Amino acid sequence: MEKRKEQKEKKEQRRLQIMQIALEQFIKKGFYGTSTREIGKIAGVSSGLMFYYFDSKEALYEAIIEQACEAMVLDYSDSDSPISIFEEKLKGALQMVSENHISAKVFVFMSSASYSAEDISPKAAEILERHDIIKQSIPLIEKGQALGEIRPGNPHALSIAFWYAIQGIAEEIAINPNSPIPEADWIMDILRGRQK
Image (cartoon, rainbow, N blue to C red; front, side):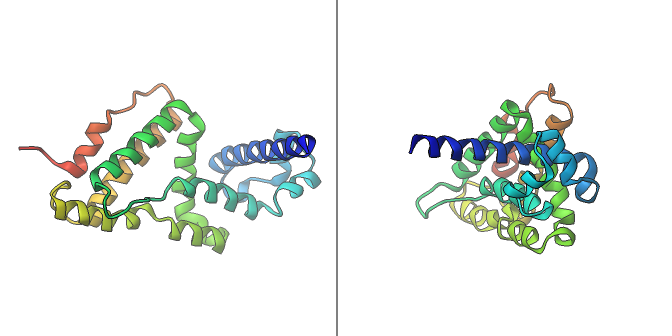
């Protein structure tokens, strides 16, 4: 039983290693410029073994998108404060990119995927559409506006400003890991506006 658990953990670690290598390669070379043979070589696995973990390059691409999208869900109930939900997501994202350089690169990858996923994989495009954080945020922003927690203005535009501020910060950290991380309050002011 213990051995089976250990094997399962090793398989998952190897799978995550392959995904991390693929992420780097997709960022550097794009989907079509990246080969599974090259990913396998960097990971130290044969091409045949690569397909044990992922059926195809498209499946690997989809797995990276799916994993990244898991963090892009706004879970809230009617009793939750909208502004506190945005603040929690923001602080989590800033902490992730400051502590883990790979997390910052995921933002770069996801930005690229939002442009090209439809041409690469209908499944990947569907995953991205289902987890569109900009659209998910609109009803929450509207609720925050009704409660007076979030500044007036077009909820869609506010969502874009907030999430793309985070996107831009992550991309800067991916390129320049020693760049300073802006204060969370600076980004929260996009939604809060100036307090009187």
